[in-house]
Image (tube, rainbow, N blue to C red):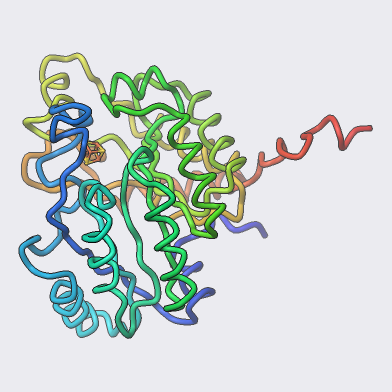
Length: 315
Ligand code: SF4
């Protein structure tokens, strides 16, 4: 029987032979889409704390954050191996020497991988060359997480992302060239996107050889541009049924070897105007999985379009 989708927990067990937990690391960084370089407004959904709402304060050093979190998670989850996760804002948007120092601080025993969240237009060969050395010399896996959110460049403009599709394509090609893994963040239920956009997103991500994906549902925070639009009735979230259809279609067109870090996003409780239709993330995940089983659908079911697609097979 086909697996429903390639779960992150399965990948971690296959790769490291045991459970591995992420330890968030909070750097004193910003984002060019918030500090005025590209824009001062940020992406319309971005809150004050970026994505890192579960992190320790950024005044603590990298090593101290990792050690504190490892002690807590190690004790509560009986964990011995960890991923250092540079999560909030744009973690490559720092001077190279600072970036180098932060990453080296994270290279300690029991860290099997370093995961760095950034924008597609904020990574270049200097940083990638250094990360390649870390992977080779320290035997630590590197995953660079890139916000894409939508394949549709009109939607990217509405989201005020400040980059288009080309920057994402370029970043993934470069990561592949340096032998580093990529992870794409994708919001599958953007009301300004269509189901066809979402399917095309899965196809482009697969064609580029992206290694991991994080699917998100649209959440809306107070005091954000999306929050204002929501309160004025200019932004109406899709229904849970529409979300489920979109995320399952996305998975069907996705390469079955791409690891799914998550099927649904989470938001901070405070200041949240809308998130997951009032359900817990795991309830939505259960509903998606039930629907997939019921309808005989699975990741990669429609992954038949690369390398000449139908044309070459039917000669
Ligand atoms: S790129 Fe990330 S950190 Fe920057 S504004 Fe957008 S969501 Fe926020």
